[in-house]
Amino acid sequence: MKLSFVTLLLVCLVLTSSFFEASMASPVLCGAKCGRRCSKAGMKDRCLRFCGICCSKCKCVPSGTYGNKHECPCYRDMRNSKGKPKCP
View 1: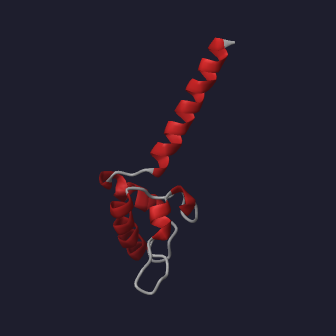
View 2 (view 1 turned 90 degrees about the horizontal axis):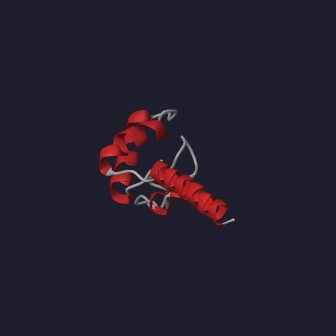
């Protein structure tokens, strides 16, 4: 009984850490994370520029090419001077 609980706890810890790593980005990894985020963007250079700004300030980039901004509240809440979302 005790061994199965410890095993379950260990599996949960591994799964949680892998999710955390996917959403967090150090400034060194911003280029790769933003490259994936902007891979389907119509204006890729603009997307990469703003994603890089947001990543360096927030230290994270949401997964996928669109949406999932709940993974990074700072990224989600950044606004431009007109009050629109800054981060792609």
